[in-house]
Image (cartoon, rainbow, N blue to C red; front, side, top):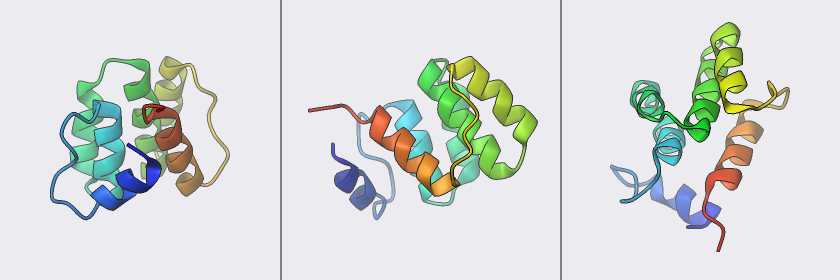
Length: 97
């Protein structure tokens, strides 16, 4: 799946089948459903899940909680705009052809 295909899928009612939990988190967050996104992040025990979990709490404004999740992910706390971070995470997590 490309970034463009991912973005196009946001017009659907549900994320594409087979999408990893971290990508489902980004998908639901982009749809404006923070609670569903957080539910997906909580179900993902991996580093990618921790990364998007940090992003969610950063967006929420809970910097302390965000820092915790970024540490678990092994990622520095970002200083870029949220939209840039979302795009960077998406690009990093999408399977490469």
